[in-house]
Length: 95
Image (cartoon, rainbow, N blue to C red; front, side, top):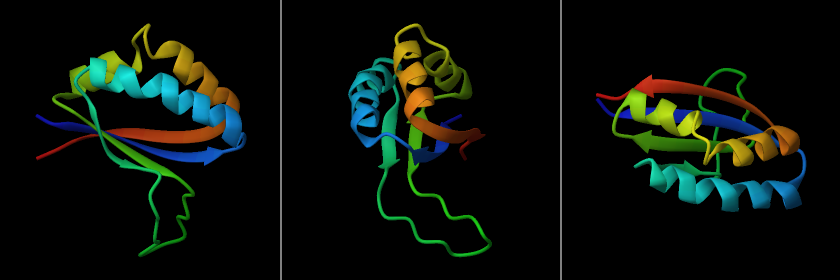
């Protein structure tokens, strides 16, 4: 079953966050994932949620998404993201 990782990212250091994107992108592909949305315009429809940057990744399965999230290839990028942004993320099964 398809899985999506959805990230709500508040970037604090734009220059170093750009380095994160360069490190992260090939690891997503390496684990069979692809970007569905990546920092495009966000419009609030309901409630008080006002994210500044949304990223949506698609993987073949939840297991594959977790493999990417916990992979040694992604770890340096994730550490850089933690230094440059505040992130909230979820994983959700698709239909």
